[in-house]
Image (cartoon, rainbow, N blue to C red):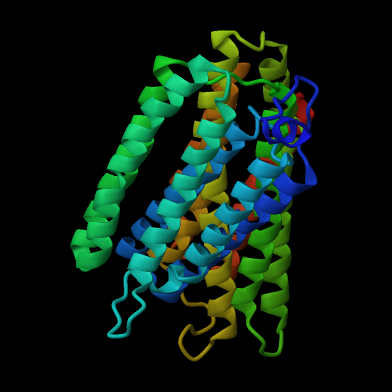
Length: 394
């Protein structure tokens, strides 16, 4: 009887907080994002940037599904822990083959197919754990069944795309994501998943973002390489660090506590809490994470250009591509922040204007040397932080 009792899911309570195992799970996701930055930096083009975004959407959605699951049943309960460990292994394998995700080999191991199968394993394990978590909960069981339809339908274009390669792979993998994500949104809209602990849900999103911010510094710093460091590289590194601190401040000092208060103050079974969790967290935190990824890629490119003087002469314009990922990443981050506030406590024209200023400066920044372009963006972010600090904007 004790063995049967231990096998039952342990429901999360309102006072539950994130466990160390969940933070461990987040680290594997961040490793995948680091590999994404390297993948896009290796062969920079609009197509590569889109392919990187597509994979980022995959990994974020998979992580979000497990974040919702761990808010239903405790992740440190043995059956859930075992399933999530297996999912972590699959995410790790998927991350390893990201650099060759669109390459074909004559050997027996196909990187695109390996990535597709690893992702299917991640999603399949999630469905199995949802079924386990729905024990004794008819409403959650119905949601699991609806969720399973779109999830499994997405597997066919995933595998076929991996087999075909090229443009067909990109198109079919896009279709696979739309099926998986779109079907999941419909399933949850039909019967909103219960957020059993608002504090836990908010904490999970804050923790993964702070880890992504920290890892972005490592990825960006990799652009400096192992060569001797000159003063422009050191100054650019300081600019990158200062800009990352600004991004941290702009979310964690005021936005995160305000959004968390709205989520936790809503009744656990209310539609308001489920909408805030689904829209302000699962949806609106995606631009934050994506913005950090592209921002880190931009810093990586700036540092790489400063250390590779033969290919990038001193004083040469940073160019459209590097400027777009650098400034576009910052604008994307600010957009996510604005969405979170609009969906919780309300936004202000100043925050919308800040996004507009960053985008308006972009055409000017692309004509500047790499160091000046990064310094200008850092100054803009620091000015925004100072303005909000002085005006005490909520």
